[in-house]
Image (cartoon, rainbow over all chains, first blue to last red; front, side, top):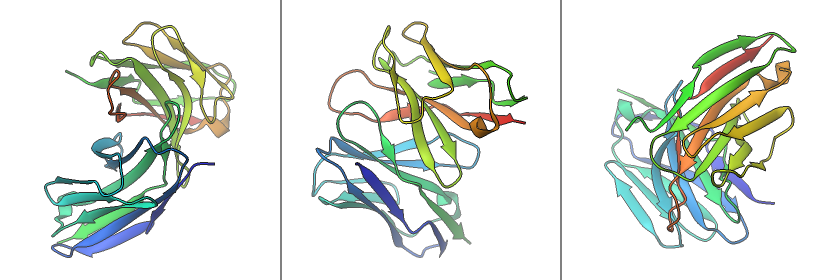
Length: 109
Length: 114
């Protein structure tokens, strides 16, 4: 059975304090790993897709990396506006995305 | 482009009442999805439609029905609402073909069943 586990559940950072969020997965035949950002009361907002081990993608202060067992979302010098829940999802066979429970990030000034 | 839109934004139902959640996308996407999000559970797939005219069950389909009205619209119906269906419902759509499978989400419908 496909599984996606995100850690930590919650993370509190000071502004400028870099850190990483983890997404570990077990899936047969990974077709893609996805990162989303979700603000309170809003729908998930697409950030990145990673397809194969060794791949990296960047957007502003965020960088996503992928290995054969896990993905990391690195946040460099975060700002308070980066506060949100970050969701990881994988797609194996079929059309469905299998989501983790998310990491709630709070960045304080 | 408005992207994925959902109506209503909020709804309160009594046990046993029925309602339909509406979803529309203007991105010419073929595939559309309905998820529910509950605290501590993550997003779970209810139903999806790979293309116009087809629908399939996801992980948690019991108590729901769907209709793919046309390429743009995908509705979710609760025939007899139960308190266990209290949740936030998200509709999503996916670009046709290609190698990218990312889904784009609507703003959600917050449903409370009393």
